Image (cartoon, rainbow, N blue to C red; front, side):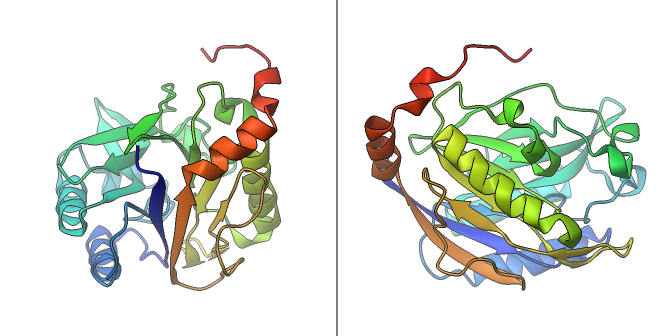
Length: 260
């Protein structure tokens, strides 16, 4: 197991429904990273912004953005993760893709669809709860609105990192900050949230506040919150997780249940 994970969060403005422009902008940011890292995290729907216009901008697995992710992961020699709109068997999914440098990937489809934006009328909810084993670390990926539902995130599998990609608007940013910290504390894990900044095509404003919280709910980032475009660096240490869980074995007292 790799004892530490070097993480980069890309907090960025997104060009509305313009995958070509967004891929080019993220490529520039990724290529500017000079140090060796293990994982680069992009926001929710990073090629389009949080749009319900799936029929116009959806891709299929293996098409442009998947090819781009594979190329960028190989070039950066690290995993890259973010969510995009995928069409599959006449259904649309808000799909997180965790791309490895060797071109293989794992995917998670957003489970809790955002009814205020009528996401459930366009997208199909994912039902699969996954854990990604990366360099010996167990990572549970989730997407934006999933953050409000603690049962879906409950640490019944002993994961080390809870990871959210998001388009979380400015008027409710206090909830984002509080819930990220709460998920870290209650699940005794690192909790990462990557949000966007700027205005989207509907006029909604986003102000970032991407963050990483440790097992005790303390911020790992030197600067927090950050409300501008930024490339944020952090290092996660598995010894922190093990030490606190051994000292405070709260997870041993959790309720036993299964998600179905």
